[in-house]
Amino acid sequence: MSDQFVISIIDDYQPCRDSMRRLLRTLGYAADVFSSAADFLASRRLSETACLIADIHMPAMTGVELYRHLIEAGHRIPTILVTAYPNDADRARVLKDGVHCYLGKPVDERLLSQCLRAALTSIGVPKNDS
Image (cartoon, rainbow, N blue to C red; front, side, top):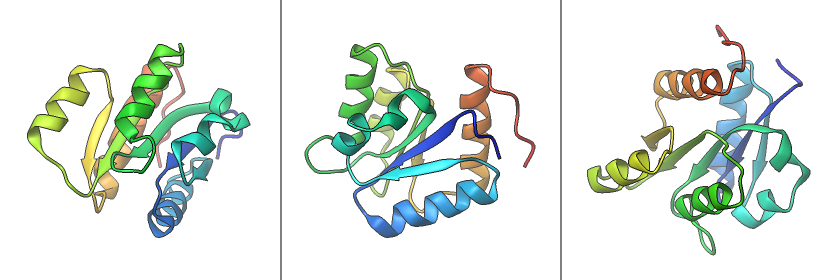
């Protein structure tokens, strides 16, 4: 597991946060979780985050709003958005905006692993062959 970077997970539903963190750790990634976009933005992990996994439907600030906020603030963190309510129009829009992957819940472990490798490779993090 790399201590040089972290995958940050933002989801307002604790069981999703916990299961995603366990999954990422089994894949060999350091992961940290946040219950809201505001908690993530206020944390020291913002500057250490190599990839962001965020739920789309959260109160206060959605995953899409968080992604746009980060881009506007100059933080170009590869982002994977997840949702229990996937649809093609939203998928096309966020991918066009630069989101790395858009996945439905429950998240397919194989697809998530592929998205993570591609996202991290895009910023020069060595490939994790887990």
